[in-house]
Image (cartoon, rainbow, N blue to C red; front, side, top):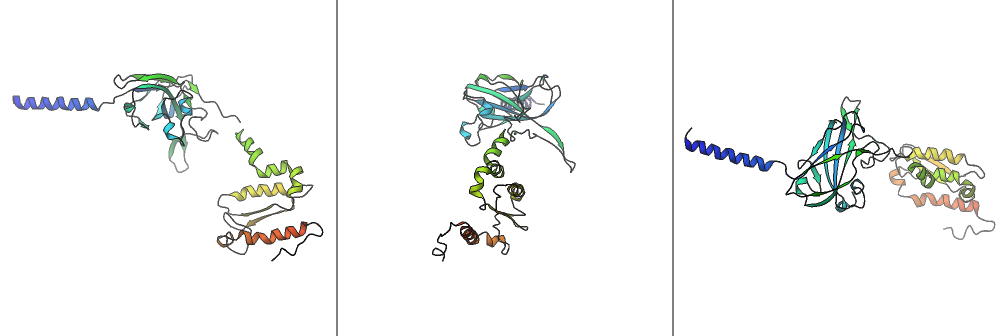
Length: 298
């Protein structure tokens, strides 16, 4: 090799070295681990790293899909078989939002927290195997999911000019949801069949003969299932009897209005004309003695 070709090769090598050096991840790095006290076995899941500038609450509680501009910086990394004491490294290669990379964060103070959204292995009937976060009664909210591990929030100072490696330990665990209090509240406030049965002594004199329920047996939203239960509840009421009607449209979909003659596509557009005769019959049957039942009928 001539001196000139050797020099050219050296220049090329140094140039490639400089490019490679510039391509290395820059910015802070976070080493996230969990202790054996939280799990003696390896864990699968998604590590979620949060950096917030608001210290009024934990970063995991500040994630709000309806107010994205106030949401902390979020970065994620999937781990498979992470052992206790082993660190998962989130650096500038970890994808994030609203900043795509940790390297693009501005210098300043941040409240940092990490959460491990734990996955379980599911073996499907078709033979495939998937790892997914199980439902634990919290509404599939990783920030509240029982069993998920998380770290206590800590305040740090980041400076892109001085990259640092920060250790985070997931030594906390989200407690189980208190026994499905939500369901009890909904039952007492929104379950109409339950409320009618509970308060029938007061509601009965007001509602007897006035409750009419129509639903298709193939309701698009499966509301017929709830109506079966409501019908059984209504028919069990006494003093007075509920005196209304529950009717099912054979194979009719959502919005069936009680018309057995016309297809639902037509009858659903004529609620008023279908119900008016029933209203008139009710008025005539319950009107006080001597009431005018003719002058207003056309």
